[in-house]
Image (cartoon, rainbow, N blue to C red; front, side, top):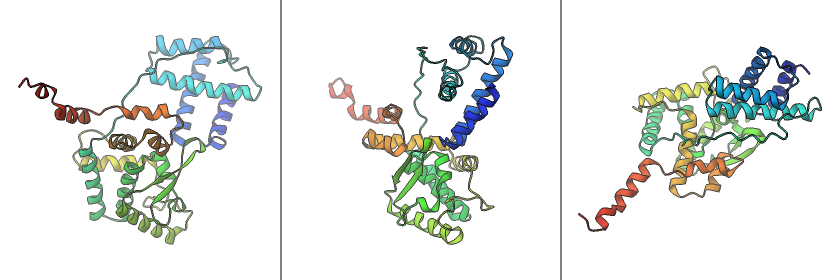
Length: 303
């Protein structure tokens, strides 16, 4: 199979059978397009071997000097791509027998402080009270992400039927066809969700999307990103706030409150506990307040 056709087949497989998110599909398409362009520019044939992949890796690292995270993502994409081709019996998997180890840079998640979260929530609620019904949706969206750690794509996929009648729980359609249930602990917010759900059900039925735009269409992730940025600016936050930061914030706040990491793992929909462990870092504010309370020098009587 010509590589262009193989890429098209792989992306279709990821969209239909694996039900990967639009964001992941776009990343796969970008990574595979880069590999295909590199193949066409080289003297190598589309009959890809382990040596072909090693040459591509060498180009990314030594010549193009791509970031380690980009290299890791592209290699992971190619692993999945060639595994699919091998499963179809079209080509031997060139990754078999290649013991590839790439460095992983551990980056702390960018979470908001408690003060920033309070400012953001206050601003979103103020916007809701002063404007229209669509702003009530956005206020609900912000609180949903902070309370449950929803990905923005998962948030936009929510349907009226996914919210329980009492507003206390919601079914989340996660990455890789992994559904999970999240719970809303705040009674006041439960009531607001009930109101939102009932309003949407009366207008468009239980299959309708929970969040819509002014045209009545399903709200897109980019629209939420834009609106969230506007609210953050209005709240006086200095840094750019993204939906994924709210997911990080939800996990960090839960860990700091003492919630077991396996509960957080289940809430976030992580398939591996190793992914969740990044949230066990001690935040700067927690470190500062803990050290102030300890005051080692004072306890030693040196002052």
